[in-house]
Amino acid sequence: MRSDDTTRDAGGPGQGPGPGPDLRLTVLAGPTAVGKGTVSADVRARYPQIWLSVSATTRRPRPGEIDGVHYHFVDDATFDRMVEQGEFLEWAVVHGRNRYGTPRAAVLERLAAGTPALLEIDLAGARQVRAAMPEARFVFLAPPSWDELVRRLVGRGTEDEEERERRLTTARVELAAEAEFDHVIVNDEVHRATDELVSIMGVRTREGSGVGR
Ligand code: 5GP
Image (cartoon, rainbow, N blue to C red):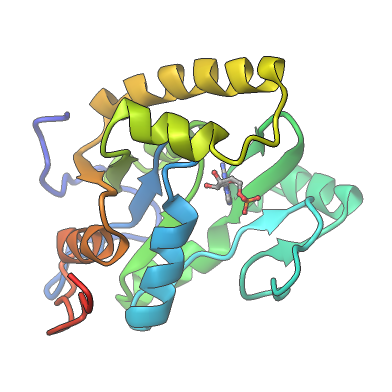
């Protein structure tokens, strides 16, 4: 973990020192299948005062996903144009398949407006944000244990042996990235993990929000 967990005067884009809440961007990353999407959906559902960045992606929408809410679903040519025009704060190919990117302008607008802002992205993306915006806050979502991560990764049993091995190798490498982060949250229970994230962001957690705990 980094030792300097204070806002530094790094001159990041769109952020000046100022009164009020801690206005750093928060980046949530972690290994595949750890539940980042579930935690960010829980933030969306229970903490509407937190703005969640809407990424652009070249993957097709899944049932129930809404364009402009869950992602901006774009074609390859549009994504290419956005890259060329420098519209992304970061972008990456995820799982060797589709491209995902964080539109920069929306993030800067929210930070300038003083809205707590959250990105849920992969590890490669988090490293790019660290390079572009070192003053951001980096949070790693960790599984309760290696065995639990294996269960979540291969539990459905729909992958063949080679695919399972590939995923496990990736997971080992991804887990080692934990040391690069400012905070580590163990995703043992979704509401609890969400509330820990929210309080790290300086946002008050909801009384009694952890129903069922
Ligand atoms: P999914 O396709 O299941 O929604 O997301 C797959 C992966 O893409 C997740 O690990 C998610 O964190 C990552 N991801 C989503 N948006 C972005 C983005 O804008 N940039 C990067 N680098 N990764 C993203």
